[in-house]
Image (cartoon, rainbow, N blue to C red):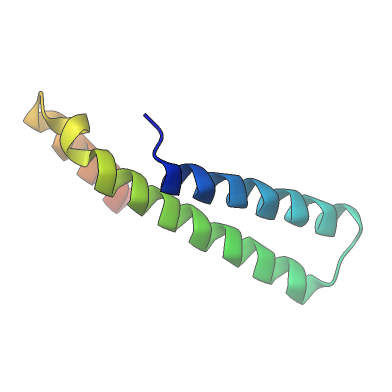
Length: 77
């Protein structure tokens, strides 16, 4: 189930992505566009952390190998 805090983060990210898309489509200022990319990246990281904090035990409660796979994917990225 999507918690309210994560849902709000994802909605804001959607708005940031739309703003980024428009900046690129309208040949916006390069520095502002790069800053928007970085803001989206940071927001996605925060959303991932929120998701992991609220669901990691549920995601891995059945099998320890699932936890190892998740850790490997997180470290890789």
